[in-house]
Length: 90
Image (cartoon, rainbow, N blue to C red; front, side, top):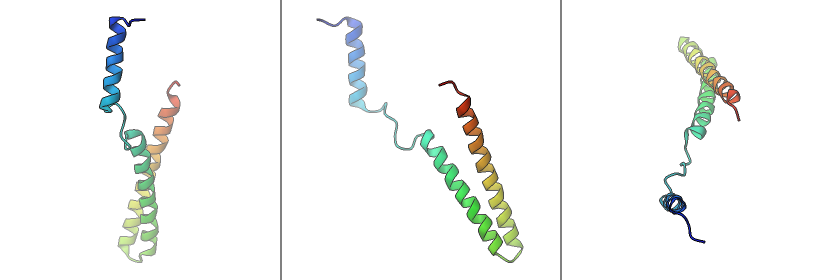
């Protein structure tokens, strides 16, 4: 059974997309990059808190406060993203 002009055009577009391969997302899309960055930010924040506590001088307090602020910001970002994701219709 012969294909119509529209069907041939759609088939050509599909073949072009398959051969080109540009429609497939790379390994580091925003969907995978943001959670990884949030995890790293949380880990760095906790590390700074521990390092700040271990330091005995005034700089230790500053390092611990920066670590705490980073941890709070990363957690707030993750909670906001989760709430947005939950609110979307499936």
